[in-house]
Length: 265
Image (cartoon, rainbow, N blue to C red; front, top):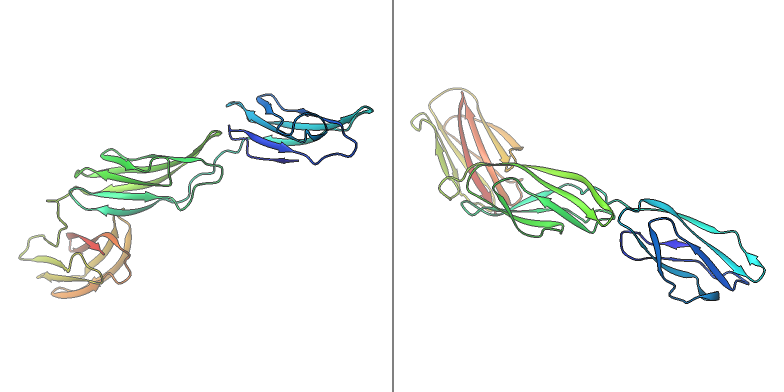
């Protein structure tokens, strides 16, 4: 006996022909209905099509062979609804920059037993395309964004747990990637070039103060990608390990902080 997933659509159940059988007696659990006998009645009735109500959770389907002398011991199969598995990790790729910034969020695959994905995005975001699939494109306003992108696997049997990806985007500044930032420019100045870059970024630091200078590369979620130490009046190179996307280069010295948005092509 074999069974297909009873996911709210027609499921087929079958047995091999039994020697000497002239007919078969099929029984389905509460919440299930036999809608057809594709091979007809009698000795060929080894296949049935069954549909399940929305409230069905579990039960047993059975079949016995019969002839003029009596019926066999039933063969049974326990069946349950198959809830969709939770989605795997969500990946994010920037597809548009300020002020018309956008991101694509994706899952590597459709979870087991799922027929689609229900996405939700934080305030300030609008799903442009892909709702119900494993990949969506989201447009964001130019204001600061904070919240979660969530994905829930769904099917006719129910919904999975929720997968979340934290989103924190700074407000856009003038609509263009910043290539130079300064704090008390006469004392502490940082320039990053070229920007955008296909290879490395040069980070030129000018500081009149003494003290260690920390340089960090952060992704769009604020997570540290790399870290270096530098000295005043030094130019360092960053970015050889970066994949294509948007990042932030943070330079800190004695409480002064410079953050530059960069794009790796």
